[in-house]
Length: 188
Image 1 (cartoon, rainbow, N blue to C red):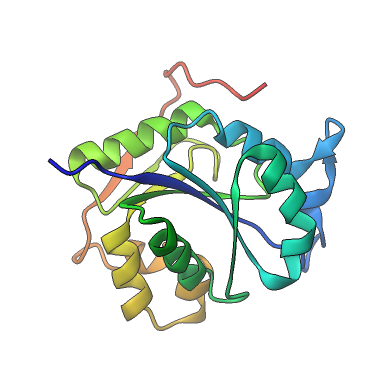
Image 2 (image 1 turned 135 degrees about the vertical axis):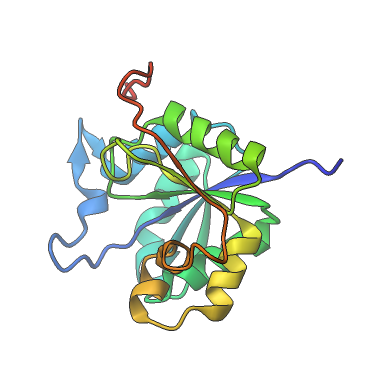
């Protein structure tokens, strides 16, 4: 049986219209994006990648090196394509998706949803009942490549997974129930 290769792809950029350079703002004396990568370092994965557009790469490069992440530069506005290119470069079968402006990603929740996705053979897995971004999402490479090939709208290209949500007839979608009674903890 082929070993399933799982990778974390963390997306980030510096040109947010609401709060520019928010990923570099300090959180506990360290840049926010570094705190997110530190939390994700507690998730079992073969690959750890920060995927950003060209105009953010210089600022992120020393932080990815410090955190043990690879830096991948891809399209600015087509985040779905950026994910697919990074996933293909590293040969991932499943991607744990997280965003660089969410310091409260729960490593154990991300690990658990990834395990559920692989065990069920789900195209997509995410949580109901956690704050948005708290547990990350797990997506199969095959589903992401199909979404990249077939998606049409700017929303589907910018936010990675809406094509999957919008086509439940095409994908096996798994939404884990609320985890309010689980032992998930916030990272230190």
